Image (cartoon, rainbow, N blue to C red; front, side, top):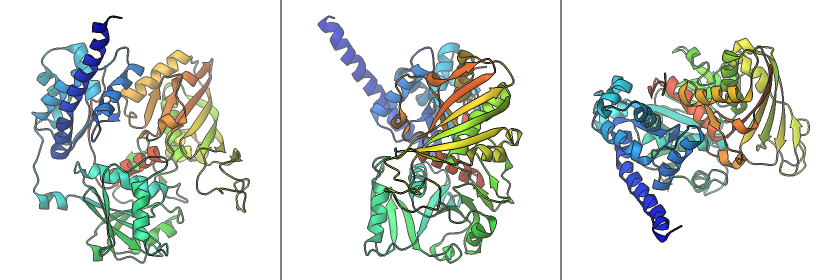
Length: 489
């Protein structure tokens, strides 16, 4: 290779960096002014670095026949910036690919694709924006609670009308309790550092994260807090403790002043609706005061199972979960009321039960009685896998089912829930931080006749937390149209 050719590679890279740099203020302005969340094939690009934006474009080569360049998407952003858009989620990657295929005038193309939000920008005063927000309280601040906090704080910059107002915890007994809470939010051994700044206001008993004032309330019961004392009204309480899972227990929250609705981040018991966003969130009504966001595994497998059942029909099947250990298990061998769970989590694979297979039927009744399930806890701290071993009503082959699931991941109403990867080298840590409920591993698919085996990765912490926030958004009446509706006819 000549010296000139070698230099050309570097020149091409620096040009892409320069283009990505030009995209950042446009992405930020659309987000903070218009409440437009931009992405590239499902990869959000708000608050991302130049390298992250380029990497999001490179991902497209895994799922499309050709690569996508930042030179293709920059004109899309520039045109959108001038169209006074209303709030929405817009995938500029899919729009760019479709525009390359169709050609023509870019502005006219965008008016066809996202016409319902063109010219819908409505400026709000600071007081109007405040009155339009929905108060959210996190009851419990463990693994899921802290990740929910990260997502809510991140999204507050776009004025998405959800505002994290408080967290409720038991006093840990340490003099520096607030500092410890802040440190756990600031640093995470799995998900890395918090993206921003966090300060502690000891006088007000609060954390200030990226400008968000979050009151820290100490309480030993869900019915013992008067939230109105802190200016919190009609709040949605997200219970992350898992201690109360039936209507009677969770109903205690509603006895506290300032609370209007409650959502549980675990499977609910009794008649509580278990919601898997994207599947049965249309069951949510204004009359519902208590809801469950089901489990991480139920959220991971239900969208894929629905997609397969809709296209091929499921006779029956078995779900085997290979699940990372959780803090319900022991670090070293010790007493545990559950079978086998008392054995050291970092040293053993542990066979245990899972209710996810049966729980699928609570969100997808057509699969009631068709699935069995079991689980193996393994010595990894995060990211799990579900193996779906299914008997179908129609014949299926690997290429056909992968093409179908790829299309579902990219262009269907389940695109926020189902992701798709087609690489022979991915392993569990590659899915840390995934905001999809589950990721289909195309290279592992086994199919023949009416038999199908699918491998679905999922970040059982972050992906699940993203699903919870989607449910909270709907409970609060905050919904965003998603564009393009379909990238292809």
